[in-house]
Length: 339
Image (cartoon, rainbow, N blue to C red):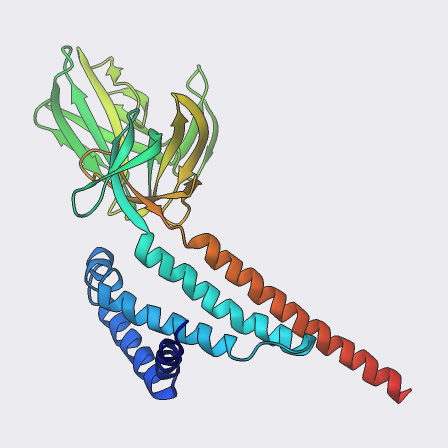
C-alpha cells in the first residue's frame, strides 16, 4: 500500500477518534435521539434512524471505537480481560449498524383463518416471506369495569320488541309489553341444576345470571345464552346480555401458525412484547381492527445484526468473567502470602 495513502488513513482515524470529534459525534447522536421522541416510531425511523446522515455519524463512531481499541493490543491476561470488555462495545455497535442498514420491516393485515406469505413495507413495496403466516385466532382482553346488564325481549318470530339496561336489582315497567318486571337477584357466577336449585355461586364475574319475576312467575336467565320463554307472557322470550362498561383494553394477542408447503411448523400466541421468531424473522403483534376483531395487524422484522449483537454481549461476559477471576485469584494469592 502507498505510504501517503496509509498516512491519510491514519490521519482520518486519528481525527475521528479525537476527543473533540467524538464529543461532537456523541452530541449529534443525543440530539437526533431526542428529536426522534417527538415523532412516531415509523416517522423517526424514516426521518432519523434510517437516514444516510445518521448512519454516517454512527459509522464514524463505530470506526473510532474500533481504532481506539486496536491501537493497544493486550500483552497479558489482565490486559486481555480489559481488551475483551472494550472489544464488546464496537461489536455491539457493529450489530446495531448492520440492523440500521440491512434491517427490514413490513406489516401484515390478516383475517382469521387466512394465510399470507407477503408483507407490505411503509413505502408500499412488498416483502416476500419464505413461509406462510396463518391467523388461527385473535384474543382481546379487557379490564373489568362496572357490570352492565341488559334484558332483550323478543316476540315469537324472534324480533326484538324492547330492551332494558340496569346496574342492580330493580323494578321496572315496560310500555311495549304493558307489564311490570322485578329483578330479584343478580349473581356474578352461578351453577344451577336441572331442578332450578343453585348448586354453587361466587362473586367472580364469570357466568352471571339474574332472577326475574313477572306477574307470579319467577325464572332464572343466564347471560349470553339463548332467549328464555316467559310462560305468563304469550310468545314472549327474554335474553340476558352482560358486559363491563368503560372496560379498557388489557391485552390483545394473535394465535399464529407458521406454514411451509401447507404444513404447520410452529404455532405460537403473539403478544406486543412476545414475538414469534423463525428463520431470522421476528413477528410482533402491532394492532387490530376495532370494528372487526377477526382482523389483526402484525409487524414482521428482519434484523441480520442481532446475532452480531449477541456475540458482542458474549464477549462482554467473557471479559467480565476473566476480570472477576483475576481479582479473586489475586485475593487468594495475597491471603496465602500473608499466612
